[in-house]
Image (tube, rainbow, N blue to C red; front, top):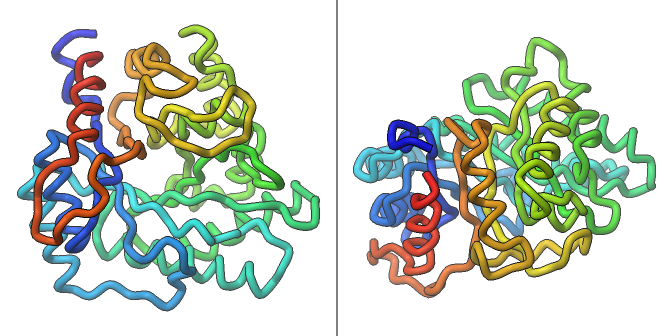
Length: 301
């Protein structure tokens, strides 16, 4: 890979947001990142009534400018509790409202994308679950105008979770009306792929084959990647992230991924452990683990 391609790999992380999301952006910039992932509300709650104040938006956009990170390379991660696949109408309603509010806050920030875990097919009918996930996406997009995309994240496949295969991601997106399809898409988490049984560590050809499956099923390439090694073995359904090279996937598959053209021009987000979780609100220092991971990934671009 030539030096001319360096700028097309936008490497970032879900950095610590102590002090606010603007501090997350500053820490990312000091880590040499060109992409970023954040939460806009507490991820353990629905956030269906949480709004974002204009002054918070202004601080964040100024911090992105300072960090040299384009808003289009920022991904907001939705709350973990949003289960848009559930048969429980009350829970589905709150999850759909939560997703809509996530999109509202993300659009106010002007970021490129909002990603979310589709949830679990309670009741066991997976086809109906795909339709419920798509309905929540459509409701959010129809309620909130803008350019921020809503992206389905593949899952590790534990229990009744949906989105673990290319066919399932494709089935969700196939329910989106053509007029809204450009505002949707999907992203791939390497730990989730591996844990769900996709043999991305077998060879470069095997990794390409997995990416081909998702692209063919969804009709488009991934809009982002989460770069995480896996504590669990292949097919373990265990969603436990590790530093790249310290898990069951190993370093080489990440080098293969960065050589694939589908990793160009999209956010490549580390969701790997931090060395320091207790950070002072006004401390802009980059995390040592983030620095190490960014340096490793840059060595392959």
